[in-house]
Length: 419
Ligand SMILES: Cc1ncc(COP(=O)(O)O)c(C=O)c1O
Image (tube, rainbow, N blue to C red; front, side, top):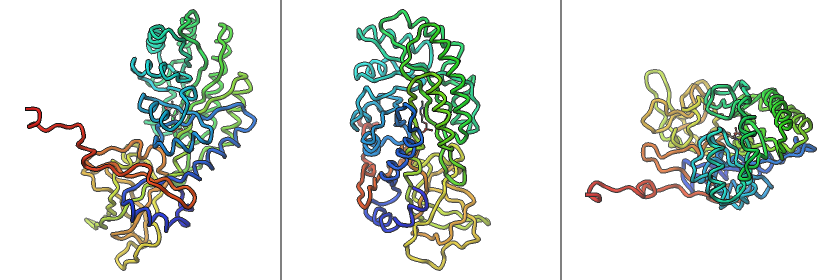
């Protein structure tokens, strides 16, 4: 949620913090719907389908909001397949992506009737062929290509450049499709790319599209009968002061692709739909001044939101107004690091920020934390994973209860138990 959302939601956030405790993720269903609508409007007139990338936020209720809007699902594991089914997505409305699918995962996807399996290597295609033959079925597959497009995003979220583990180099695609053409167990339905995440420049999509267009012309000369073209996800959002991806320019690239190849475009956005619709709410435990530095120590930490530690990501932070004013609160001229209780120097949520008014007991919101927040969280330091709340209009509900220490210990055995 953006800072604007906070200002009229402060009472709600205090109520959630008081009743559910902190840290807690809070998502706004209305904001998710609004973002889905904006994207759909930008793509108006372009035959397309939005497959929400489940990994960004895989909470069942969040999935439910997107399913009711008519989205399909982009999944990368059997766990996500089960989640999406549980949230009501039809298997036919799912695309199975991922660079390392296991044989049992391919088998379960075929058993469930997943609409499209995007393979990322010749080896995987051969395995899919074996699994489909064993099941006496035809697997509809796509090929994720590596279009060798350089994006200006964090190195860990670039995926479309030559030499990366993702996708099939363009020149290696025709031998795969020729091999598959003779097999009743395989049907080539799509080719596509996913060039990275948090992409702010639509020109990268146009570059990728231009390479796909050439490839598709080549494949058609070989006799390929494609049903769609997949332009992946990656649509960039504002975390602090970035200018978000220009949706009009993005839509132009998608329009050019769809028109030139005469196929519907499938896209797989995750972050764009849910990132700005969520925040992580933490409480300040201490303000610690030491050796000329000031640390705001929250009860939320890197295990709850990994992005700052992993990518150096910068999220906007805001004090939730309405707490008790304290005379020892931070002033306008005090620069602080916002950290958590985890035993790592890399455990920070923000560095060099000014957060006037914050004192022990204050509620602090880490904004735009709806994507790759909870879904990347862990229980490191044996910290139970936090609760998730979905707000819809004036109503809210806990959509995942806070884990307990018993949840953490479930499945483990003591030495005495195995002796
Ligand atoms: C194949 C694929 N599609 C879509 C996405 C979603 O990316 P984003 O959340 O940046 O839109 C990812 C993210 O890693 C991905 O790997």
